[in-house]
Image (cartoon, rainbow, N blue to C red):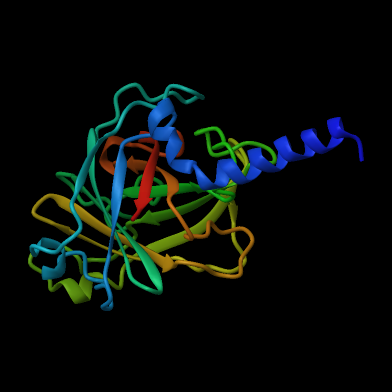
Length: 254
């Protein structure tokens, strides 16, 4: 093999490995941010969004993320009603847990009006974390994203004053993929779990999954990864592209 071919092969391999090993460099070049520290624990992580675990001194530190308008594709949404979401992320030896918390004066689900306009939230990850991140517009051809989407679809349980454990049963979480707008697909195997509770005009949502699984359509949490967030307010008639969004941020593993 000629020197030129060997050198080219070295550059290609270095670029691939370097990208994977230096995903956190996006903080320096401004292509992602902020960094959200992923707190590590040895014990089982709670599935109740208001468990005391989330407020004790050893709890994951919350990061406040500003949600902006969706002005990339029609229907554009210049003024989403949810302006901010607080994010906490924890892991143990087996699973990763993402906690989202945001203010919402109304609990909107298909128990009170059209099933289209319900409260929703989603997080999105590049499926291949070692590559250059795909477009924030739900990925792009050849660069898929893995989306975990939650919807509030419950009955009367879950209203103020109702025990948390009773409310948790009324949730829908979907494990999805996309490679651009209008390509959202439902995975055959659903690996993501989630629970949410609306209390004191605030939603708290937990999304969790094993760190690593055998599904090639899923993000694998072996190192720091990128994540994006979206929130829909049903009472503001938000649906599909009509949402508040935050672009790529870094879930930083220690």
